[in-house]
Length: 305
Image (cartoon, rainbow, N blue to C red; front, side, top):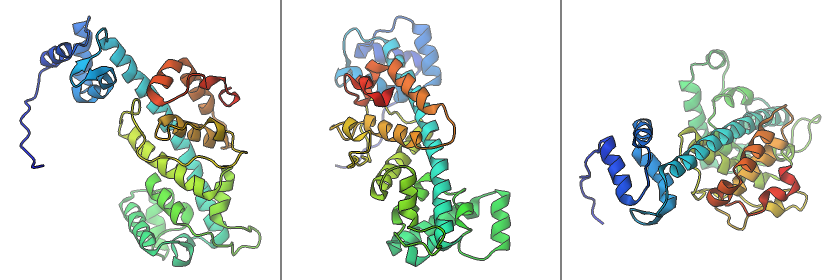
C-alpha cells in the first residue's frame, strides 16, 4: 500500500478532552484531566483506554478517566519494580559471566574464535563491544585500553560497559568449552546457568526475553494489556518450582514475571525486592488477572508466599 502524507493536525488540551468525551469516556473532573494531559502525552495514554474500547473510537459506557489513570499508574509502578529486578539480575549475570569465563579460560579468551559457536555472531559481538568500550568515558576503561593489548579488555572489565543485550549475545554464542584451569572444572556456560539453577538453553532464552523487557522498561513503554514479543521458554525440569505455574498463554507477561522472581530468588545478595514485588502483585490481584495474564487463583500457590 502506498504511503500518504500525515495530515492529522496537532490538538490542544481542551480538544483532546472533547475527543475523549466523544469516544464515550466519562470525565467528571476536567481540571484533573487537563493537568494529566499536560504532563502525559495523549498518544501515550491511548494505549490504556484501548483496553476499554468496544470498537474503534468507542469506549465502553461508564468507563471513567480515573479508571484509565488507575491502569496507567499500575503499569508505571510495575514497570519500575520490574526494572529494578532486571537490574539486580543483570549485575549478577555480568559478575558470573566475567568470573566463569575469566577463571576457566583466561582474561580475554571470551572473544576468541575457539570459544564462540558462530563466527558471524562473534565478529558482530566484538564490533558492538568495541564500540561500547571506545565511547566509554570511564577512567578504568581508558586506563586498560591505554596500557594493555588485545581487541577488548579483560572479561571483568569489558562486561562493565556492555549493554544487557550485548551480554545476552555473548552468552548465547558462548561454546561449552572445557575449562583449561584444573582448579575450576566444567565449562563456563553451564557454570553460569547452574548458579541460577537452570540449564544453559533455558537461561539463554530467559536472558533474551529479559533484555527486551529491560529496554521496554527503560524507555517507559507500556507493559499491561500487551503481548510479549520474545517468548521465554518453559522449564522442562520437574525440580523447577515455576514449571507447573507456567501459563499456556505463552505470550503473556505473567510467565516472564515468574522468571524474573525465580532468578532473583537465586541471587544471594540481600534484597527485599522479591517480597516487594510479590506484595505489590497481591495488592493488585484483579489488575494482574485483567492485564497481565495471571490466573484467577494465582496467589494461592506457595511460590507467592
